Image (cartoon, rainbow, N blue to C red; front, top):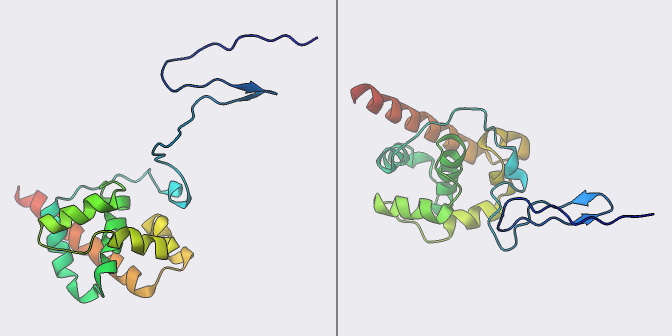
Length: 158
């Protein structure tokens, strides 16, 4: 004989408890922003992330000008900042921040580049194994080096 029990309500708001043959759904997001999904969920979050200001990023990009082949190349800097500098995952905000530093690229350029290059969805440390282009790897490495030097130099002089 089966018994049916009323599920216990936990918390408040958007918690849904649905029992179906032993399965439980505790949290369901509809039309929301899932922060962990797709290939980028494999970011190495155990590494401490550095922090860089918008001005420091602009300086590093200027030092890397020889490696920037076009507007889409700024997506490499975006991914580097996303994965190593705790800048978040908002490409539009990144484009606005660059504009504020005098580096103007067309709106949507970074998102478009990431869409066309699936390896950019992965953590920057996994690009080689996901067939990233050589020029993107060179720019990533040079940008990381330049930005790291700028951040460390400014820390020492502060």
